[in-house]
Image (cartoon, rainbow, N blue to C red):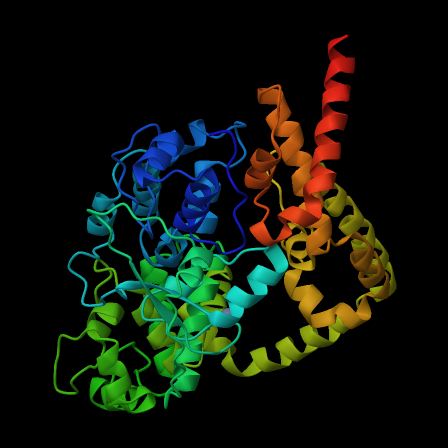
Length: 467
Ligand SMILES: [Zn+2]
C-alpha cells in the first residue's frame, strides 16, 4: 500500500477498506485485499475484521494504526466485551489480530443466538449528508450496524437498508457509502414508528457500548446489580428471590409484545426458562448485549450507569443500606461540582486545544481533519464541550481559530499527498495526487494549479536536500 485513508470517527473498518479499494481504482477487490493484507483470500468479515496484524504490517508507514486501535474503534468487539469474561475478550482480540474471523462468531455464541443480525449494511441519510460536508465523503458508521438498531442515535431518523450484505463469506464486494449513493441504490422511506422512543433508546445505548471502552464488567457483578434494581422496584425479595410472576408481565407490558417479538425477546409469562431467567440466574451463560440493553431500559438505567455502578465496586448490601441517606450525599456532591473555577479551567483547556490541534496538523502518517469533535475526543472532553461550552469562552475562541474548513483540509491533504508520492517516484502526476489525497472529481479543476505548484515546489526542495 502506498497510502491508506484515515479512518473516521465510528467508521466500520470495512468502510475504510472499501474507500481504499475505491481510491486505488483496482477493479478486482481481491487485488486490493492482497495489497492490504498480503493475501487475496481474506474474507472481509464486516463486523469482526481479522488478520489485523498482517494489515498493520502492510501500512505504508508502520504504526499508523495498531490492531488494538482498529479493534477498539472500528470493530464490533466493544459491543460485546462488557458482558463476556475478560479471558474471552483476550482470546477474541488474538483471533482478530491473527486468525480467521469465522471462529469469532462461535466464541461469542452468535452462531446459536436467537438474536439475528440485520442482513444488510444500514446508514443514516442525514449522517451521510453531514459526513459528505465535513469530510468530503460519506462512510459506513459502525453504530448504525448494531444489532436491530433502526434509528440514528444522533438524528433520530430511520436508518436505510443498503443492498450490501453483512454476511459476505463467499463474496468479495467492497462498496463505499458514497459509491452506493452514486449507483442510485438508495430508496428513501421514512416510516413513523409507534415505538420511536424505545428504538431510540436501543440505538443510543448501542452507540454508547461501541464508543466507550468499558472492558469486562464481570458477569456476577452485573447480575447482582440487576437483582438489586429489581429489589428497588419491589420485584425481588430482600434475600434476592425474584418475583417472576409479577416481573415478567410488567417487563412485557413495558416494551409491548410486538416490539419484543420483533427483537426475538418476548418472554412468555408462564415460561420458566426464558432469557431473563438466564440473565438473572446463570452466571455461566452469556447474554446478548441487546438483551442487557432491554433489561437496563426496564429498570430505568443505561450502559453508562451500569458501568459507573460496576466501577464503584458495587456491593449489594452496602447499596441497600444507602438507599435513603445516599440522596443527600449526591446533592451535596452536585453542589460542590458547581464550584468549579471556570475561568482557570477555560484557560487551561484553551491551551490544550491549541496544542492538540497543532499535533493533529503535524502528524504525517494519519491525516485527520481538525474539528471540534476530533479535538474534544483527543482531550477526552467531548461531554464537557457539549454541556458547558458557554462557560468556556476562551476555549471557544481558540477552537474557532484552529479548526479546519473542508477546503483547508483538502489543501493539507494535497500537500501531504505530493510529499508522500514524491518520496516514492520522480515524476508525480496530478491525477496521482488527486487519488492519494482523495480529491473528488468535482474539485479537481479547482485544485489543479495548486497541485502543479506543489509538485514543482517539492521537486525543488528534493533537489536541494539531495545536493
Ligand atoms: Zn444520523
